[in-house]
Structure formats: structure tokens, C-alpha cells
Image (cartoon, rainbow, N blue to C red; front, side, top):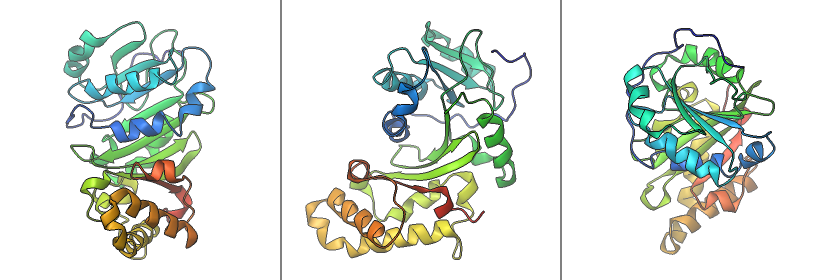
Length: 267
């Protein structure tokens, strides 16, 4: 059901965007989370919250998910009216751009979202505000839906995100372009807001990234075989050492690794 008209909840982001910037998280939405889309009822809704000054990445997300579910609908939400107006040229029956924030207003007749992508949105908020924003967005999810909230650099080479259900965080995923990677902990500067200030000795997320760095260093003799083989070896070593790595070589080859939220959160 559509929400009543009200002022959007949230603040305007910087709006920085580039084509293909969010390809890493899109591959995750169309990969490990593809089952969420496939199991949804007809015409499932996906929301891109805070798509930025240009609609590039929202359109890319829609095109990628259409390969998984040809009847998927994409709703792009922005607080700033000028950004919504600029995106209207790309509106079609299965793609809309509207003014909205964490309250996730929906067009008439559109179902509750099965996926919400909120990227580079919470980075400018205080850490104390994150849980309330998660709860507000999570409350808008349809049955079995997922919220993916995270951050990436300007070119999309370093990214991390938290996958949440309506009940709260489930996993942390880090994703790095291996061919330009010096060490895995470089992704620390792009951790989600709830973790970026926790990357200090004594915190679980710091311990996880430090262990990944050590495994990467131990695997340095494989450097001549390429960064992918080195990362595969590092991920395998982490798992063998007892770290609960949730995925496998197919995702590792992308420079991607996911762990349970409990493995990196102090709460």
C-alpha cells in the first residue's frame, strides 16, 4: 500500500555517482540474493534509496536484476526534488523515480520491496543514528525481504555492505578489486558507518581484517599466479583457521567475502 504524503525522512547526500560504481553490490544482489527475487510474487519491487545526482546506478541495478527476474520493478528514491526531476527521462512502467527517504513511500499498486539498496547514504550520519534508520527501512520490507546497506569508493574498487532482514543485521560482506589491491584491510576506509569507527584493536571487525591481512601476506608466494589465486588461498586459510566464511571460491574470485554479523560486531 502507498504511504501517505509526508516530508522525506533523512538528509540530502552529496549525490556523488559514477556509471558502474555499484557493480560489486549489484553482483551480490543478482547472485547470493537472487533467490529473494525469484521466490517473490509477481512484479516484485526493488528500491534504490539515495541513488544520487544522476540515475546511472539505479538504472544499472534494474537492468542487472531484470536478468534474474524479468518482471522486477525498480523504485529510485531521493530527497532532493531536482534529482528526481532529472531522472524522469528514464521513467517507464517498471521503473519510477520519486521523492522519499527512510520511510520508503511506494507508488500506488506496488508491492512492499523485497530488496532495498541503500549505498553511500548513512556514511554522513552519526553512528548513533544508524540503528533507527535500519529499523525504519527494515519495517518496509516485504516477507523475506533484505536490506543491503553499505559504502564504496568513487570508482567502486573497494566496497563493503551489511545485509539485513527486518529483524536486523545478518552478514558483513567486503568486496575488493583484486588487481589493484595492496592489502585486504584497505577496504576498512569504506566500512559501513556502524563499523568504520570500530576498526580499532580490541574490536571484532579489526581482528577479522587483521587476520585477512595476515592470510594475504602468507599467500604472497602465489603472487606470480595472480591476485585471484592469492586471495583464494587467503580465504581458504581463514576458513581453515576457524573464521566462519559464508561463501566459497565462486565469490572469492570476485574479491568478495561474507561473514556472519556476529563475527564482526561487538553487540
